[in-house]
Image 1 (cartoon, helix red, strand yellow):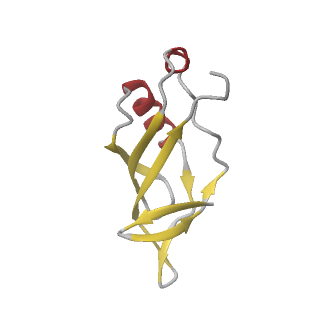
Image 2 (image 1 turned 90 degrees about the horizontal axis):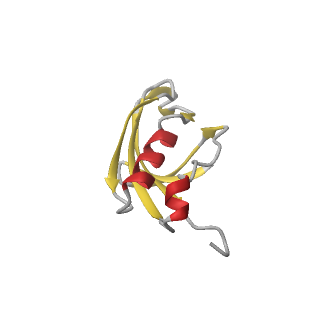
Image 3 (image 1 turned 180 degrees about the vertical axis):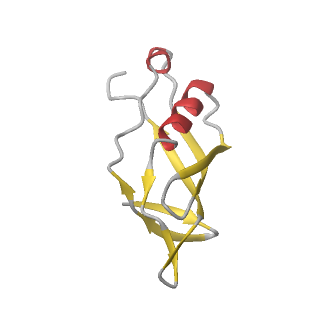
Length: 101
């Protein structure tokens, strides 16, 4: 479960079997780290229909890796009065260097 912002309120969102995002090898070598904040539009079936960068990490490789990962996610659909509905979420994706890097 992820805690996300949805239309200005905090809610818990279920993501089906999400692996961690891949850390670009070139970013590891260059010691790049940061958080990419993505805006994710999800349809009533839980499929990502659009993902954009709301706030950059300042490193294009990390930004692209975050978007690539977010686009692979499958969400449990949002609902309104028991009916599945499309929703937009703000999803931070953090890239932190491993200890000793």
